[in-house]
Amino acid sequence: MSLAEPRSISQEITDDPPLAPSGVTPFGSSYLGFFRLSLYGLVTLVLTPVQILILLVARRFWWVVPYAYHKLCCRIMGLRVRVVGSPTKERPVLFVSNHVSYLDIPALGSVVPVSFVAKTEVAQWPGYGLLAKLQRTVFVDRRRNTTRKQRDSIHARLVAGDALVLFPEGTSNDGNRILPFRSALLSVAEAAPAARPLVIQPVSIAYTSVNGVALGWGLRPLVAWYGGMELGGHLWRFTRLGRVEVVVQFHDEARLGDFPSRKELTRHCQEAVAGGVDRALGGRLLAAPPDLKESQL
Image (cartoon, rainbow, N blue to C red; front, side, top):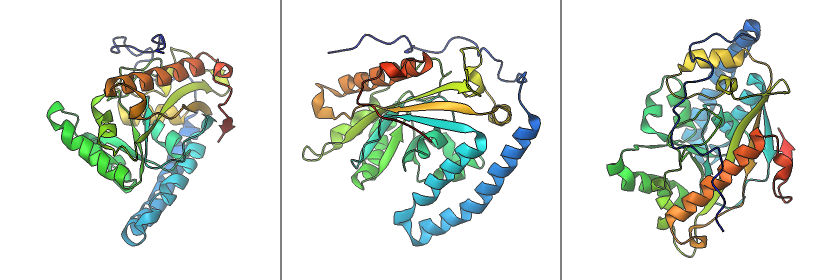
């Protein structure tokens, strides 16, 4: 049975950001921002050579430092991760999630040890490109004529038993809705052998409050990073805030064989994720299926 399309699915973002990307946050503490960024930089400098060493001499433990690092980053940045449901223990697995901000990386990485699928441009970003490589990110070119190569890159990692996170919207959004999921990269499910079908688990990410006060439509760009927003300015504005809650909801697992086509599988994932975002932003998490367990990090 197909669910009605949730209101958070949009063909494209056409509205200007409610809060101008270059605008100054009317509240927050510059002292807190400076402290957080300084501590974040120190932790990053200390752990980066440790991770490089692990990748050189004990590669199978590559996930230990990133997992701890993301937990530390969430604490430093005041990001309170509220987990609903449970990540599957099956491997390999492809987590399929909406994408709101660079903050999605520590939010998800603090819950389960994973690598991410990112566009090739990320590898060239100063600082963050190196961090992405140290977490064994799979870089893909999103041009249409490279779809097969993208699928093979992801498939190789999944065959090795890895857990990957894919953002099938192809870009980040304003945090108030999700964009249509692209089915091309989910073609990796078709390459999995019938005897061991790929496990796919939809995941919803929603930023819901600041210091316990609901984060409404107009202020959600304080955490959402999209469009023409400048990374440095956005990060500074975010670190000046207090404690931000993000809800990460894991939905039921799915396999390609459960659906008539890859497009139907993509549609199912999109609807599950959009429904989770709607419930979280609307304060209706109690309306979620009763088998979903909730925890806080």
